[in-house]
Image (cartoon, rainbow, N blue to C red):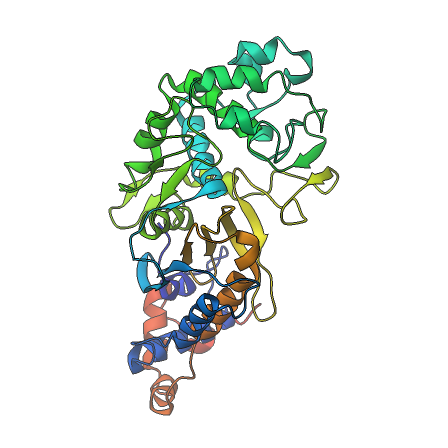
Length: 406
């Protein structure tokens, strides 16, 4: 579990020395904490953006209703609903489901030797072995849109079929043409490859996909309001890449687990290994791959999750983004230890993508470290904070002896 920012900055570097830049940041944070300047953060600028979206400002089309939830350091710091929306309403996640399914995939790689990222689907699904052009598709490729299988619109009838099982659906996927093959040669955003990988997960895990999801991800995170509803609740063909509904609070718990290197901070329970989270949030694609189709015009993708998106003036890109077609999305910002959730299914992500980037920039600006008070700067000069830093660093050296290297 990550330490609070104040403590992380106070830790020595890998060489065992504290750098001057970190001392300055730590000093400012200490002054801020002592002065109480951050006791009540003013999020009025964020609220104005949200209210404007309901009225049709900052978006191509007005957003009828939605909920915003912001966590920092594992705790909620802002939570409001806008328009025709009530806090706690469950919304269709659509493709934001991919990120939660990505976490399930990583969880299974930790316990199932026959289900690893480079495992070929054909080793678990006979239908893929029977089709020569699909024998080499791996779990990694299936969950990073590089399998070679058709893109966003293909296979919708298979994914939405309520009268078949996930295993039968995988058999139908195996018959689809390799429109973007061979495997690993191109990036084509879609859901059919993940659907097939979900069937492989069932075989490896020995349980229905929805049960695996419940046991390995939802229950450990207390996500009681999250469930598969597409193609219908209880279907034996759950839509692996787009069938969950969830709430802002449940999604915040999930995203914060990723931010905390696999740990649910409220309980201390480990849900994923830190290495699994690191892999999930590492780009699995390359610029050498053909960009066949992408809603973001790039292929910055991990395991079921977008990376380095929503760049705008005033803020760097968010580190990871889970986004659905009807607007439900969430992102994390590692530098500020932030989780942001925009819960709705009454618009489109395209309609609010720029708005979300503006909100990120506004939040970053709102949480900017304020100037320390003069009296506390005097306290710094008197050596009180320097004494505390020596205690943290585990040294009896004078402040002047601390490393000034960059």
